Length: 304
Image (cartoon, rainbow, N blue to C red; front, side):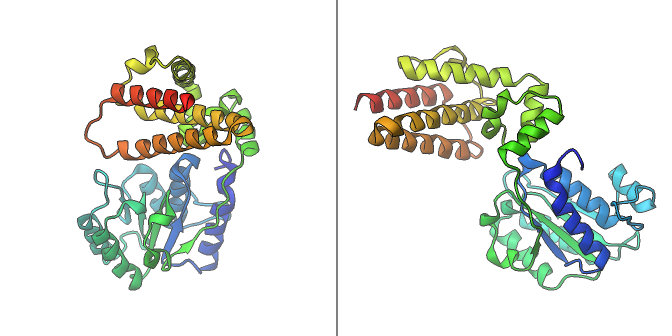
């Protein structure tokens, strides 16, 4: 975990809870996936399941550690969304498993990834378990969006403290990975430093740069450029996020000379992000028409 220094304080807090025997039965991990939440949850699970915990973390040698690292620990129950939701049947199966005796003699551990995706029935089913947890049971609730969790769920969990890294910390981390920091502008597109590092390693950053160049040209001329005319489903969200960055840069420029125009462009930027959020649930969309409409709208705002 030394490669992700912003996670270390939260992991240390978790370690102290384990060592002091004050571990609650449910822990809320409100850490964005783009900041390494998966890495963190993996580390927390390893430490929670280890039967010979050391001051530095899981021992890595006990049978429980070996089973966990092999991906077949019988007392570990990971839950992820089935499609776009975590469904009630998944939670009911989980709560049933958590009533059984731990086969390794330690904790029974459930990790719910993206807990905000639980539908209402699933959340209510989990609530019953949180109210009456079994002995030696620990549930890790992960969420990117804690505001979407039911207050009754949050109130029954102890939240790990977490402070997101600032731009300076992320810059330093990229340098430590021997990566350029010139791509920091694309951080909102990637969603976090880990994904940005992946983009740099795989040279996907060149695709984002081309999107930025073509959006700037399209907005200037009113005609959709090359890469944007042939955009596919797998890249439309990234292209729109790049456009959002381009427009917000425009908002900063306009705010100095024309506050009304800046407000209109900011409103268009907000609409674009709303489209990004809904694209994950839309069965189909005419991407070419969408891009044309955005450019036309921008041209109309400029002319007003």
